[in-house]
Length: 148
Length: 119
Ligand SMILES: Nc1ncnc2c1ncn2[C@@H]1O[C@H](COP(=O)(O)OP(=O)(O)OP(=O)(O)O)[C@@H](O)[C@H]1O
Ligand SMILES: [Mg+2]
Image 1 (cartoon, rainbow over the protein chains, first blue to last red):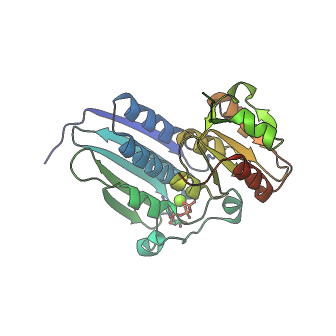
Image 2: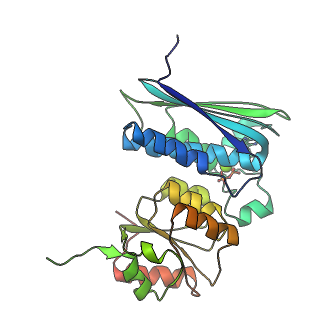
Image 3: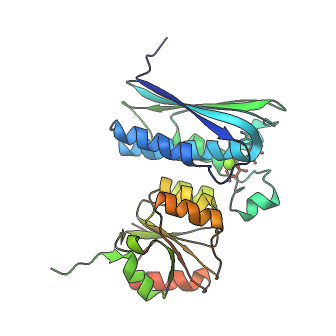
């Protein structure tokens, strides 16, 4: 099954760059707003994009967010080359975090990122190879039943 | 008719807050408040036009405020934003306020003034 992308755009994320982190998420939100996507969907995409982006900044060297908009859904793919996740079930648990003391002092490391991403996306798909990297595929439906 | 909205300029007076950046942004209305130092919490639970009370002063707070369209940031406990945070605030036009008081005091003042964490 193929879906024609109405719009697709890629944003780079640099590991460790806490200063510019969050800009791709903001740009994505602006794009969605410009094309008139429903506000509730925009809110959920923005939360997921920010959290996924911060995980790349915190736990990977390099990554990218690919945004694809089709007539019926928005797709976010976040892929990084980083340390990967050894135990995904554990990583998905609210409160679980391997953030450093330094990151925790900055207010990261609540272990809420991945649970928040899952909660806000309609389809959540995570794939990770320990030592190599992580890929998230998130789908947000534009019609029919979506999350509140 | 009396204007019942609460503006940033009102809470600057009520809380005796210092404007670190954004004198030109004090006319913005505030619809509620959120207090947290955990960024995932703020991203997940704050609402647009909330005033955000935190002790974080690093640059990523600007991204959070921008993304969630918060009305502004109050940094408490006498902490000051980092230089990078200030540059970011200027670039994104986000108001940063500060107070020497601890969070509890500031939130109490804002609440007494009519700002709620619920809506
Ligand atoms: N892209 C990634 N690469 C490697 N490890 C990751 C990645 N994303 C998440 N993890 C691992 O999963 C854990 C949980 O991630 P999650 O986003 O839920 O919480 P956190 O990032 O630790 O804290 P928070 O998101 O609340 O600031 C992380 O601490 C980390 O060990
Ligand atoms: Mg995270």
